[in-house]
Length: 231
Image (cartoon, rainbow, N blue to C red; front, side, top):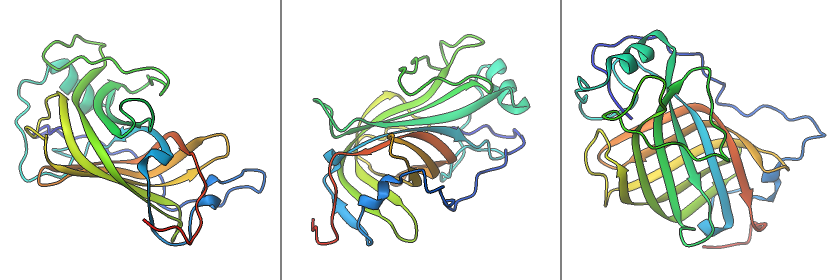
């Protein structure tokens, strides 16, 4: 979720947007979902995903105007340009505890050959205090989720919608609090609770949109659903 004016880089090859056929030995969790789109209680799901945000020339996201990142540390800008550092986004929705309806989005920069597992919290170090080698957080905000849509057509996909309630690390796009937001993806979910995501995206209304062509994580349902269920 940041812009680098005038920077050019190679965009890595993305994964196919279409779900592949899974071997019979793999059980797909989404057999529990209805054949048509359906609104479901957000508390019925556990969701977490982490994926690379492509360094599109001049920007990471779609937004009305570029942001001047001249204050970006030279070592970080250089790493993003030469490919030794990548931008990633992590979305987490636990569906439990006091914050069961809160989705966290953290956009961060990290060495290309390094990855922090979902079971481990990311450090929160801003661009103004980061040192070479640090995992640098570009943006971190919370959204109160009040609606979950799931569908099997034409392949498993979902959308979570709500209102941004808190900025922990200020966004390059200004104050997001109070804006509507929606987070979507296609996915293949496995019986062990893990999931592969396609086109994991987040859109903050009137501000910006970002995406990861592919991501890995978890997606677990706490109940089964029938086609006769209603809102």
